[in-house]
Length: 78
Image (cartoon, rainbow, N blue to C red; front, side, top):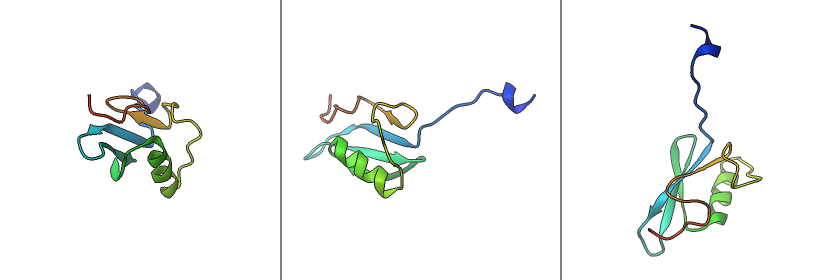
């Protein structure tokens, strides 16, 4: 079996996990599978990404950001 015949999976560098209860509610942010911070808004995701050396041009680009448990506008527990 060659590499081209093997199934491949693509994981974007940034994963924003589901909203966690708190005051204020927050979402954990992973960069390359490692939790690197907490976000309470979209702008926090951009700041965390920038600190990790990642420039995000589009928060809706699935090749850059994976949103778990909601999209970029979901910041309250369901």
